[in-house]
Length: 116
Length: 113
Image (cartoon, rainbow over all chains, first blue to last red; front, top):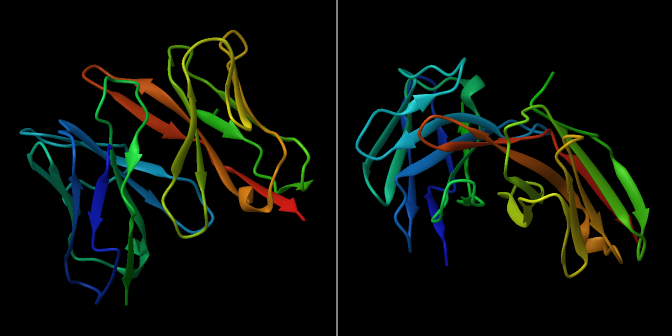
């Protein structure tokens, strides 16, 4: 149980275009989902917390107008990278927990974004 | 001071030995502690979680927590080459409405056959 599905697994886009990444909780409802970004040989950095039915909460230094997050249902959160640039190329991973706060997070398989 | 710190490694151990991974954290309010394993190019997978001081064992893995020292560790017994990966320590940061999970930089482990 507690499966998080992320799509697409990888995407290549041209500079200036936008890319949407979907994160779904398949067998549980998630009022809160988390988006992380990981650059090569670095750790996971929390970008934002996605809250169902309300605005996302962004970590310091993350541009909310560039990384649009929508959490329209209890099983789906989307991250849209707008006007992507090569420096946005990274591994984006979503996560959620089906249980009480403080419970382990379950991760999607991640999305490898390459901006050319 | 970073919220979660780990030795970056690489840590090399021979097959069959015990690998010891350490982590310190700065937020005394943290209550939940996790160890994740991440293979190159893949998402993290949960190895252990611990909430109370002391030891918690699961198969070849033992997590140890000392809240007074703000220290959490992971021991891997009978290390196997397949254990070679990056191990991420993660700690919750309590917010008003929900917890966030903050990751350390990870320790690269290499188990030599």
